[in-house]
Amino acid sequence: MEFRLLGDVEVRVGGEVVDIGHARQRCVLAVLLVEVNRLVPVDVLVDRVWGEHVPQRARNAVAGYVSRLRQVLPDEVRIVGRQGGYVVCADPMSVDLHRFHALVERARVEPGETVLGEALGLWRGEPFSTVDTPWLAEVRTALESRRFAALLDRNDLLLERGRHAELLAELEVTAAAFPLDERLAGQLVLALYRSGRQADALLRYEQVRVRLAQELGADPGPALRSLHQRILRADVAVPRQLPVPPRSFVGRERELAALDAALAAGHRIVAVTGPAGVGKTALALHWAHRAADRFPDGQVYVDLRRTAEPVVAGRRSVVLLDNARDADQVRSLLRAAPGCLVVVTSRDRLTGLVAVDGAQPVPVDLMSAEDSRALLADRLGTRADPAAVAEVVSRCAGLPLALTVVAARVACTGFGLEEIAAELRDGLDAFDGGDPATDLRTVFSWSYRALGPEAARLFRLLGLHPGQEISVENAAALLGTRHVRPVLAELTRANLLAERRPGRYFLHGLLHAYAAELSRSAPRPPGTAPARRSPRRRATRGAPGPGRASAARSRRPCR
Image 1 (cartoon, rainbow, N blue to C red):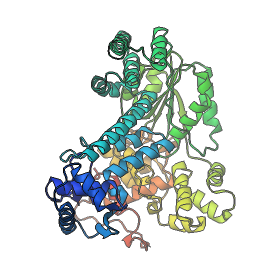
Image 2: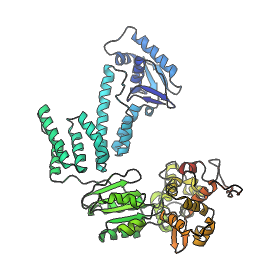
Image 3: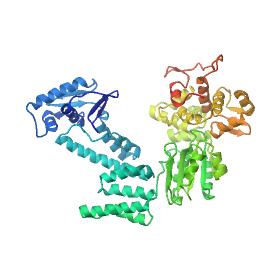
Image 4: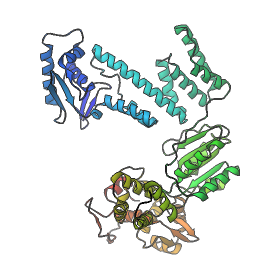
């Protein structure tokens, strides 16, 4: 059920528009929804619907409109008459207007362009666009004022993140509609300057200055004048784009020391690589925040899985390129960051970036049992049963993502660590929290999907291998070919295998479980017997073993 007021007045049930009658009847509903769950006296309702042109028998007309609305609205929404008025009883979050207000208030507590972007995305046009009364016009004006303030707040956050390139076109259009708004003008001037268009930025400032003088007889305010002077001095505020560092961070002394050494030695590129869920981004963010004072020209952050916008940085900045697909994707951005330290995180080993571009490799391995216990203690305290801690540490295989998912489940469900440890015996199902970013199957699938057909087939077959370590000879026998080394190399580059000793490859326990699920679901040649399934069943899901519905969500058909 959706009530939509930020545009035409609409009611949607299951995605389908409900016919709620003519304009006056929609106006009655709009007035009641603005005051959802609050009583609106009939006299107030009449005034807000008709204004100064109240017809005879207006109260009877309101009663008729309410009666017809009751007939077309679903049963879960009630229009109740009491104490000489009416009230719509409904979830406020089902009304886009109230959801917008809630999201804007939430953005004050947890600043983020995503929350404000969601709020602004609720707008489809002018509020109550097909109905109009003096009261609705006042509400519309107040709403549009708040929307404009939220838009400017979001623009500031995007500019802080260095996302001026994607914002520039929208700023041009909005500034043309509000030519006297100095805050908006400052955002456009800054975006132009950061896009390498200093002359255009100075010209736009001058246009605003002249217009303010001609139409208002005023000079630009101190904030806009200060920005103008800083652009003239090339002294615009440096970017501070790094996301908040992880709350819990333990261990990784070797990797942190390697990053410090790379900076001291003057390396321009550092490649932080490792398997999915091993904590590459957490390590890079923790170190970058720790070393922030050594980069006076700021910090730039780009998530390459979501955007590939050019990086614009100063002479002594740290640039964090997160989730790189491969070396080629990184090379296309290096030219935009001359003189900076570029830290790249990737599931790929980025061998080409190391060999050709001189990147300093910092491989991130699984956590030790001691550090795994420390991470759990940091999240849950030290009162957990040692036996349960030991089992969780063992089954999480040193993967920080798995450990943090377990800790979150304990915190969110109130279950003891002993109960969660028992669930982990059933495989990957216990790590499915409904969020793709923390669902291990989904996270592993990002690496699996990038494999070629032979490497994908060998990875699935490794799930049938009884151990977590395999030799080149056994891998060749499993794949049915002598030319297995290039396939093993591809799996190693993707960090789905680790070559612990020459010719000996290791697959950690959670990846082994994922490979086993894939092998069970892969198409079989005619006449072959299916792989044996474990007799264990998940009582809470009523489905065989790990990997049914949630596994299907997180992977494409096996190749």
